Image: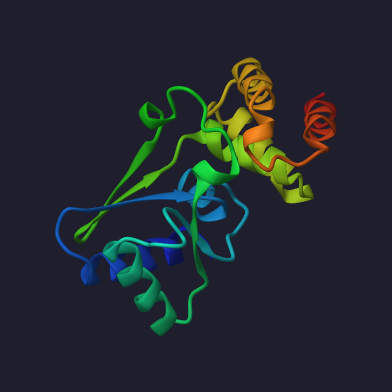
Length: 170
């Protein structure tokens, strides 16, 4: 889905939720809101997938009615969240009762580096080239994450993924 479609969906969802509701997006939909030209296939929200909040249950129910693919992503269980991540989220705007934010771009990039799909490298490059993340700082964040790898299920080839990213940036 492109930006116009995503805006329409978020507006519809914003009509269904309580005033003062706030979500954080991650993944392709978050990048679409930041200006990425690559369309997103789904909408990923940061939250607890085992015990979703009332807000996320409402969004998932409405998305089901709309035949939309949505996923709740417990990001803090997948990657070590970088220091300062809570201050780097980006407010996108108000959609009815719903305030929409994009989660920390460094956290997005780290999760994509961990997964290491072809499109994930493109997404990280988009974040770098559009000044949402600084490569040197991302390298340090990745190094810090590796020191905590035992507590998370980081991909065993994440350092190879990092080398691939750096070769694509040349």
